Each structure stands twice: as C-alpha cells, then as structure tokens.
Image 1 (cartoon, one colour):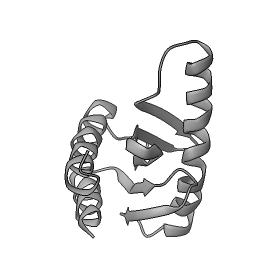
Image 2 (cartoon, helix red, strand yellow):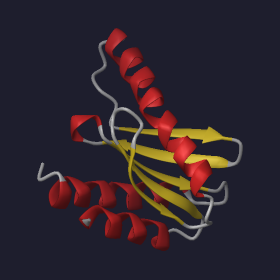
Image 3 (cartoon, helix red, strand yellow):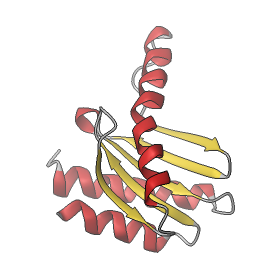
Image 4 (tube, one colour):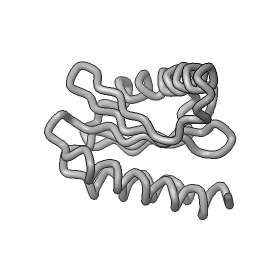
Length: 122
C-alpha cells in the first residue's frame, strides 16, 4: 500500500514520534506506523480521532466558521497532530511531549499532501 511508506517515513523523520495513523470516518485504522511497538494503545487512539474531529466540526459549524483542517490534542503525555483529509479520513502524527510542535506539524502537512496526491488523487 502506498500510504504505508508515507506513514513509516513520517514516523522515522520525527525523533519523538510514537506513531502515524491513517483513519477513516468510523475510526477504522487504515494504516499505522508505530515507533515504540505500542500498537494496541495507538489503535485505541485511532478509534477516538473521528469523534474529536466530529466535535470540532460541530462546534465550527455552529459558529459558522467552516470545517476543521488541522487540530492538536494533548492527552496524558501524548500529543496528537491531526489533519483532516477528503472524505472524512484523518491523518495523525502522535508524538511524545518533547517533540517540537511546529516541526511535527510541517512533517504532518507534507505527509497529508502526499496522501492526497498519491493515494486519494485529490
């Protein structure tokens, strides 16, 4: 699968990466690259990503502010940098707290662009 190499490269490029997740709108994990071997924990994180995205969508719609494109979640030592993709797919880079947020977001944006172009043809 072409997206798997993108996920793997994203994790390898980030010193403090824990995982890269490619998730559909129901929370099904389409692809995962895991740096620390904690696959079960990352699968649980993936299941919740669409719920967070839907809540953000609802709040922005209510305020007439459009759709979310990028958001950040910090939970118990996990930092989730999340980018919304077409058809309600989600790409996330999960890092530890020592990662540099700006660099993580730039890497995520490049990976999201590649997935849009190479996988989704959008």
